[in-house]
Amino acid sequence: MTNLGNLSCKNSFSNNKQKQNYLPKRIILVRHGETQVNEDETVLEYLPNYKIELSKKGRRQAQETGSKIREIVSENGECWKVFFYVSPLRRTRETMEEIIETFPEERVVGVREECRLREQHFGNFQEMETRKKIKRMRNRYGKFFYRVPDGESSADVHDRVSAFLDGLWRDMETNRFGNGPSTS
Image 1 (cartoon, rainbow, N blue to C red):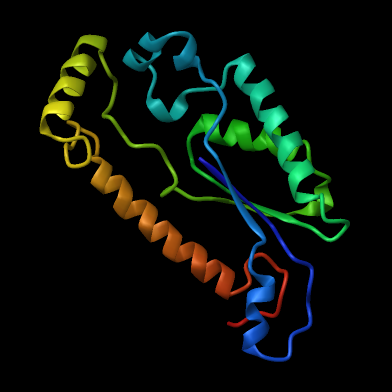
Image 2 (cartoon, one colour):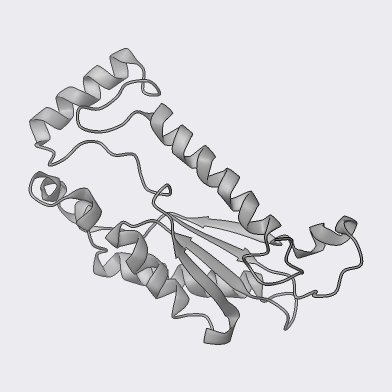
């Protein structure tokens, strides 16, 4: 999963009331493009989930997404920059790389790998029959609370994403994006 903000270029502030002027103008969430699993679901039986790659179609989707995002964030003139958060999954890193290729280098403030921004872990190698059985059990038990064997529940995902959001606020408050005065 990838986050991108369109950042303000204001750099002079007289008090904390103006702090809001250097918050990101936008936060855009991008999951990833189509993957090998979309082409062949049995890949999950022998390839670890974090190693799944984009398909050719997924790379094109990422390039198109990058162009569209660049168009959106640059619509208000010359003064914009972007900062990326990316999960450690191969497919999300490949998506981000394709997106970044659509931006002028001087517009990219930074990239940060963030392990809390990954998809729900449904266990290690996933045999198709076992996977179907787990899905039935998960539906009976309740999707939010059911913890997949060797994986995590949706509640676990909620907890780690909530922790990331707290960190995102700290990044904004300490001016990690470089578009206002530092508060630390």
